[in-house]
Image (cartoon, rainbow, N blue to C red):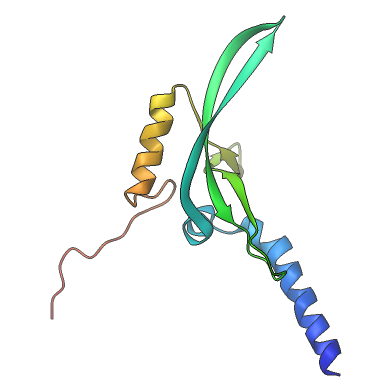
Length: 126
């Protein structure tokens, strides 16, 4: 009986992580699982063997929440929440220069949110 309950609990935990975790707040998940390691990737578009355009995007090294023991980590794109035409979705944030991408990484390292709001106590009244 106990093994059946443990199996059921593990199954429900895996379903929760696979189904509901990707649709949560990406900013809170980035802060919770993200490590202080970033990299800037370059994305080149080619036409007729020549570069037509270049974009840059930022990735953060993150821990993967898992029930299976191990040190699971991967590079995850920094995404922004976009809405348009009655639909909202998460999309990788692209930059036109390396300097813009570096500026975004430096702001995240100082504690500024990439997406959403930042709340702080200005004055405490006893």
